[in-house]
Amino acid sequence: MPRPSIGVLILLAILLLALTPIAVTSTTYIIERIKGHSQTVEPVKELLPLPPHAPPGGWPHKGFTGTYDRAALQRGFQVYKQVCSVCHSLKLLSYRNLADLGFSEAEVKAIAAEATVHDGPNDNGDMFDRPGRPSDFFVSPFPNDQAARAANRGALPPDLSLIVKAREGNENYLYSLLTGFGQTPPPTEVIMPGMNYNPYFAGHQIAMPPPLRDDAVTYADGTQATTAQEAKDVVQFLAWAAEPKMEARKQTGLKVLIFLAVFAAVMYGVKKRVWSKLR
Image 1 (spheres, rainbow, N blue to C red):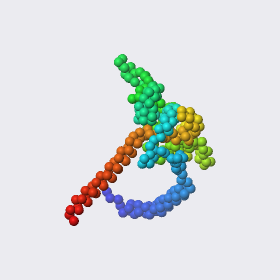
Image 2 (cartoon, one colour; image 1 turned 90 degrees about the vertical axis):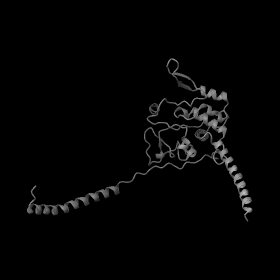
Image 3 (cartoon, helix red, strand yellow; image 1 turned 45 degrees about the vertical axis):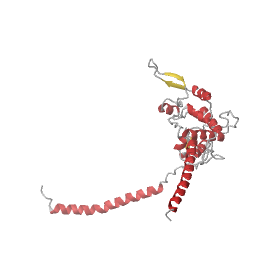
Image 4 (cartoon, rainbow, N blue to C red; image 1 turned 90 degrees about the horizontal axis):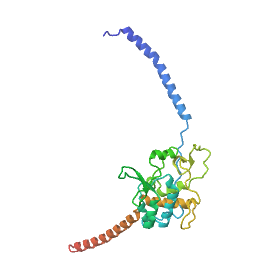
């Protein structure tokens, strides 16, 4: 391959020197336009949810010796059954677990029998429907996620079995969310069509409409069914659903601590007795 002549090289050098100021000027101009554009665009402010809060009186099951309020759990189950179960499932809970709430065996059987379970196949290979049994898991309101989305304008209602453990803030978050509807959004926030304003939800907009209202249920024990009372009861029920063995865990932990304290005292006495002979 022949080498370029000296004249060609000189010509290329002249062209390079001539184009260099143009390239530098163009690059500087582009950088300045980018800087000016970035300064005029305001950053999008993230709408953070309000800090969750507990109801007046707090939660009776909290603390080292806290236990579940059985009356509140039964009321909370009533709220879930009559209100929340229309959209939300409890896939990890069986009807027989309701005996831990204080329901009798007959009451558990009656509650389970109200549900329709799609079972099978039978001896003929056909699927069939039957009344629920205490051993059945809670029947979901929808056969699959696609049906749930279709019935809720594309939104998928979450399963509530572990919802208390799955959300930051736990019981306080759910209580604040359930009682946070009905407020007027500030003028700076635009609520999208089909959404509902709730300052305790991330972004302040949630697809779920207000699920609770005053007298949404009629409590069998005569408790006044205000929105706050319904929210407090159903959150306690969901806390129990997420950790039904909490009381047994706390009792076991207390027994272990007592054992360790006695064991430490005995071993300290043994140590003193053994080392006393070496003095």
